[in-house]
Amino acid sequence: SFKEIFSYSDLIYLFVRRDFVVFYKQTILGPLWFIIQPIVYTLVFNLIFGQIAKISTDGIPSFLFYMSGTVTWSYFAICLNTTSNTFIQNSELFGKVYFPRLVVPISNVIFSVLQFIIQFLIFIFFLNYFSYKGMLDVEISMYVLLLPLLILQMALLGLGFGILISALTTKYRDLTFVMTFAVQTWMYLT
Image (cartoon, rainbow, N blue to C red; front, top):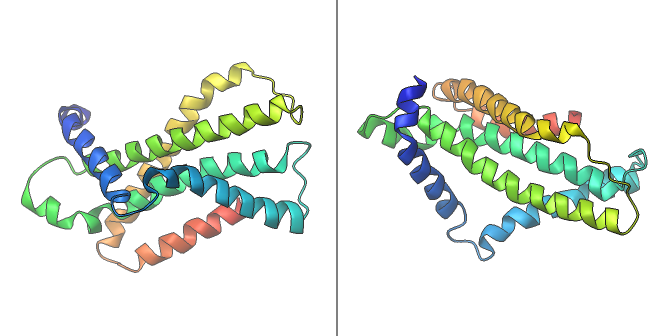
């Protein structure tokens, strides 16, 4: 029930905070990985698809084109991958105390939204840069208002698929390995 999940909103906050601290606890660069990852992936895609394969981007600067895809796809992939491992990674916690089991996957999705917002701001920075340099003519339309709904839709899709896969991974542990491969293959197919 959504009312019960909402009553555990403080626990969701604690899980999001825990995920942020644990995810970058013993790294040298810490949260800078939020910035480094999309830029490196964008450079790799720009090299492979833009320079080697010479795939057209229809007048959009290739760096910007691939960055938009990288930021949105990584958001969906992180939602899906972290949610699909929920029951395996938190099995000890689920056995100790009662709370709605959807709290953990929801906290994973919220943590992914925070990462997406940081990466989306980087994309906006580069969009403004290319627009300022005259390499791109930016026209903002009313469809920008639909962006939060698209982000919510990606979150719900990742959450839904992730929960289904998480239920299956409790019995078939091989799905954790298959998921990593499947998400990367899905990215290249799209």
